[in-house]
Image (cartoon, rainbow, N blue to C red; front, side):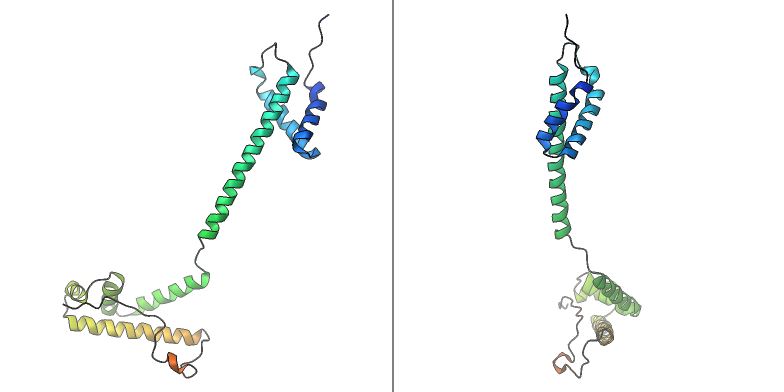
Length: 190
């Protein structure tokens, strides 16, 4: 008489036992058995008729467990990388963004000739002679526009510091005349 081939339902108890041994947790073991049954049903077309069903199901369970462990390790590595990236890449503080907008607004409020002179010398890093040539003005006129533009930005900065609640100039005599915002250009002449 031929022995009866076990059905998947008959293997649930040994599968749960093995899963519990691997996971050391009843709930995780049940999840592992569930995932094993799903994978086994998806792969049943690959099952040969002479295959030992118990051995095959235990192998499927073991492989599902190993795959899950690998996935968790990869996810942990990715999480660690994301944490490192978020630590390394700190976005500018909101206060800094507001301050930058205020400075940009002050720069844009300058007369066009001062803005152009400051832009060429301070932002583009052009020599005074080259900037004067681009603007089609004598170098003395360029220097005058730069001086007036810088003074206007200093005045903006002084007013901004006072409005932020900083100590007034009379409280800090050593700070009198020293701008907080400095616009520096290359000091080369033709």
